Amino acid sequence: MATDKETLKCLIIGSGPAGYTAAVYAARANMDPVLYTGPEPGGQLMITTDVENYPGYPDGIMGPQMMEDFRKQAERFGTDVRYEKITKVDLSGPVHKAWTESGEEILAHSVIISTGASAKWLGLESEKRLTNKGVSACAVCDGFFFRGKEVAVVGGGDTAAEEALYLSKLCPTVHLLVRRDEMRASKIMQERVLKTENIKVHWHTETEEILGDEEVSGMRVVNNQTQERTEIPISGFFVAIGHKPNTDIFKDWLDMDGTGYLITKPKSTKTNIEGVFASGDAQDNVYRQAVTAAGTGCMAALDAERYLTEAGII
Ligand SMILES: Cc1cc2nc3c(=O)[nH]c(=O)nc-3n(C[C@H](O)[C@H](O)[C@H](O)COP(=O)(O)OP(=O)(O)OC[C@H]3O[C@@H](n4cnc5c(N)ncnc54)[C@H](O)[C@@H]3O)c2cc1C
Image 1 (cartoon, rainbow, N blue to C red):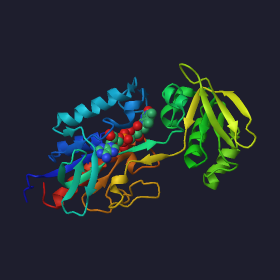
Image 2 (cartoon, protein in one colour):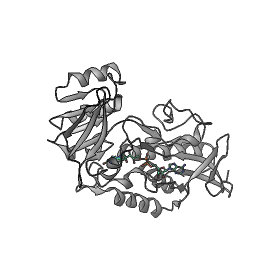
Image 3 (tube, helix red, strand yellow):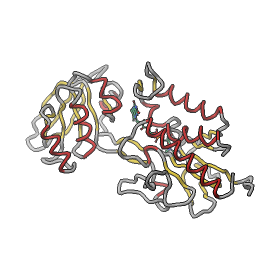
Image 4 (tube, rainbow, N blue to C red):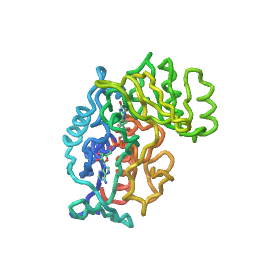
């Protein structure tokens, strides 16, 4: 069956590592992908400096340069990159519909969702000013830069526990700032944290200010019971209070967990709707890395290609 001229074979939503990798594979499989970049062309890595853990860049690479390379590679094979946001979808199918901010209706036989996630921040002015200068939301990404230095992690959930444990293997002391007198993290994670000698838990503690001009040099914390303020010297400040997947527009259609992460079938990127696939941080609350996002972007394009082939569309 030849594809209707008005109906795209493959719509990709999002332009981070997942979306652009899906585009490379889809374009090379003759799926003529159209990719909508959304509000952050290039995704989360556009706001970082050095990326040192993406394979293939032995000297590291700046995040924005890396995403420029991703885009160029996707365009080289014919991906149509459009700089707009998708604001609404109707996935009642078999042909899926989406609408752009400017009201254009798009029809697509397959849809790859790679809308990513956003880290939650505390909202302090100093946090914003010192982002990438000692303030981070990813220990796996940035912990290495703080080897042998004192750091702090904010948060009381599983993510904070994981970040603190990861950093405890690199740093002499990890100050874990917990707002309440207990952690929300699972019991096993709490036990691991409390058993780790170089993790110092500060209960009932909130951050008032991150200190430093050019880079982080310390933090001022306040005990929310006694109001006592303390300044602690640190070099790295890791915010681990959760992420929000950018999946609101799919909530009427797709299965998601309580936080909004899209649920995919085991060993695939298939969602609960035929022809709709999810990749990257929008469906991954565990690894959250550029390389894993790219990996699932590849999987989504391969899953979409098989779907279109079985449906006789390509
Ligand atoms: C500061 C920082 C530093 C990091 N450093 C590293 C690192 O060193 N190494 C590493 O591996 N990982 C790092 N990460 C994590 C990495 O950036 C993410 O895991 C990765 O970017 C996820 O890729 P993604 O394609 O799933 O989504 P994202 O990169 O989050 O991209 C999502 C895309 O979806 C688009 N979008 C959202 N909503 C819509 C919509 N409605 N319509 C159309 N498009 C939409 C956005 O515009 C964006 O282009 C870092 C993250 C941050 C925040």
